[in-house]
Amino acid sequence: MPLIFDLALTHIAGRGRQTLVAVIGVAVGVGFSIAMAALMQGGQDDFVRQLVDTMPHVDITDEQRTARRQPAEDAFATVAISGLRPRDDRRGIINPTAATSWLESWIPGRFAASLKTQGVIRFSSREVGAAIIGIEPERESGVSPIVGNFVEGSFSALAAGGNNVLIGDTMASRLGAGFGDTITAVSAEGLSRNFKIAGLFHTGTTARDEGEAYVLLKNAQILSARPNAINEIRIKLDDPDRAPAVAQRAEAELGYKAVAWQEANESILEALVVRNVIMYTVVGAIMLVAGFGIYNIISTITHEKARDIAIMKSLGFPESDMRRLFLLEGVAIGAAGSVLGGLLGVSMTYALSLVRFEIAATGQEMTRLPIAWSLMHYVIASAFALGSAAVAGYLPARRAARLNPVEIIRGAS
Picture 1 (spheres, helix red, strand yellow):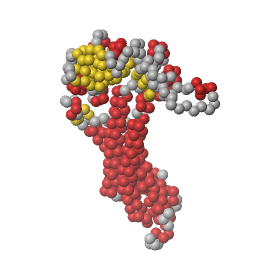
Picture 2 (tube, helix red, strand yellow):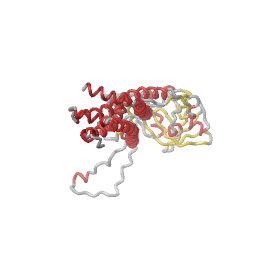
Picture 3 (tube, rainbow, N blue to C red):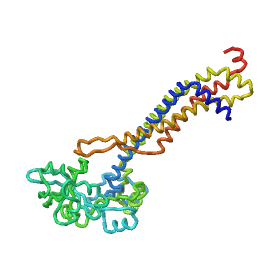
Picture 4 (tube, rainbow, N blue to C red):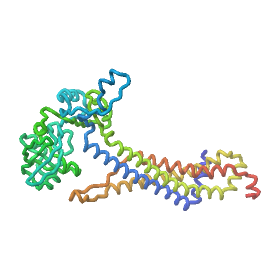
């Protein structure tokens, strides 16, 4: 085996310029693949992180996933029901105290109950349709993404009591209102109440900044004429990946629809899977192109060393040694390219992590490209490189092993 190594090294060193070009080709492919994977994975991780941070991990509402089973269906084997109209029930989640106490006994995280009702916010002669959300500030601070997004006032102002309201800065701009002004909230039931703007938030999500108003839970219950009612429980878990199991258990026990964040964003997560498939397909294509360079070198060496191969076989070297020799040369070029490509990948990834740019919508806020540093990117890129190098080296190696030494020595080929 050491002799095979020596021969392989001699063949590679004998064509130094071509070998260097092939190694550089593999290195560039590996380096760009690593940088691209780091950038795409970083963007995906950042997107999922924002998705998880800005929405509840489990959302329990007063809806039913399926229509309630009718008594006639239990009494008779065959029943056809048509024209069924659900009962008009505005109570929300029945017995909310018992529901929240049960959740508090086992939920591995935090949760907050709220009452959401549709209404209109008025100021002067202007009005804006909005979701009026009644919350308990102490619990809401553990699950709400708006707590740290205030441009004027603060979330804690709502906990001071009184008729205070928190609205988005976009809604305030549309109304022509400002911090400290008094606005009027009118519910769908026709009830109205005046509130003082105690805080303006900006989340960057248009639907929230111009369409949500937060008041104390008791004020929302008065506006909607639903005393002691809630219609939503939002849960933030210590481990977001446990959301499906928590949602399943909560729905089975409470009987209300519980949606995990994975279910709510199923189409987005499926698109990310397709995106990853495309990314690694591109990586494979880059490595395949680099493999052609290795194939050309090994094929050329095989052709030029035909007489050497004949002499070696005549001296007793088996076909397996010939295959091993040229396959080793291809893998050696791929390994050298992988090492250099790994260093190039580190350099390019670090350079990308230093890129800063300004988002126009956020004024002077500067941000960086989302980069994911993962050893798996290097392993996958190197595996593709070594795999393509092995295939590129095997094809000429198999041809070299089949050469007839007698015909070569006689000059038949």
